[in-house]
Amino acid sequence: MVNEKNALDHLMTLLAVPGLSGREGKVAKEIQRRLKSVGVKPSWMMIDRANKKIPGDFEIGNLIVKLPGTLKGPRILFASHMDTVPLTRGAVPTIRGRRIVPKGPTALGGDNRTAVACLVTLAETLLKHKIPHPPLTLLFTVGEEIGLWGARYVTRKDLGNPTMGFNYDSGDPALIEIGAIGAHRWEVGIQGIASHAGVHPDHGVSAILIASQAIAEIKAKGYFGKIRKNGKAGTSNIGVIQGGEATNEVTGKVFLKGESRSHDPKFLDEITDTIEACFHRAANRVKNHKKKTGKVKWSVAKDYNSFKMDRNEACVQIACTAAKRLGYQPRCAVIDGGLDANYLNAHGIPTVTLGAGQHHPHTLDEYVNLKEYYDGCRLALEICKERAG
Ligand SMILES: [Zn+2]
Image (tube, rainbow, N blue to C red):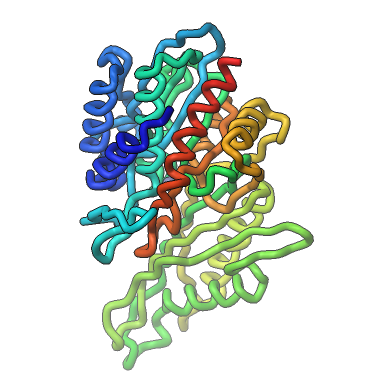
């Protein structure tokens, strides 16, 4: 029942629309234009005010579309994010065989336009064939890639109080993601004491030396990179280090940014706390001739909490049944990345994450598998039918 030609047209057009995090306005316009043309009434669509709460400059909030049910029953939610990563800048999608690939040296943006196009196709198919369905909410979020911002600030009320959710943000339609990792992002400003490196190096407290000693201790304790402690697992990374201006100056300031991740919320705190302590200790160790030390300014953003759903949860069961009907052998997995589903679950909407053909996101090798994309569209339809009973 899914019209593949139309589904492909939705996807190719949406892939070509730029929409980095915070700049999703054009994407939302294109979605609304397409939804209107398949019979979605303008009064069913709204843009929420999440952008007023998100730090930084966001053009718009989340796009929320509520389709009235033709059947009675609890409302269900389908979600996707509109933004793409900076590597997609200038992407031109082109079809090669059974794939869509970027024409030039960019990523493609299949993460997550496959999902967006899949939800447009769902609305089109339901309305065109008058397929009986319960009340549905289609959510198109902003700012997923830089901290799950849209999903963080969307409200249950604006979504129409759905009882379960199906978020699209992966590739293989057989993979049902029932949990995801939690993450912290942190920043450290190290304040040392600047001095002349040739005349009075002993008057200085090198911020670079403090940073190096801290990093060496984090590594020595086993909290850098892949972390395994007493059966618990996590990761950490320092991804930014900035500081220093001249070789003849003992460096007064260094700034670092890093992150920690774990599926275990307590262990996640342990990783982040250990890293913080290493910076403070290093700052207390490095002294100048007057025994003065440097200072550390630490800040942490607890990005999102991990979650893991029970396999008996209704949305997990429904997704598995729907995948089986399409001939897939569904597998449930907990993944190491953050998802809008982390926040949807935190809002009390049990939400699984499904695939619609995107592969190698955030790389120059990104592509869309067209068969999986069409099956992703069919999967959403099967989920609606399953709910219709
Ligand atoms: Zn994504």
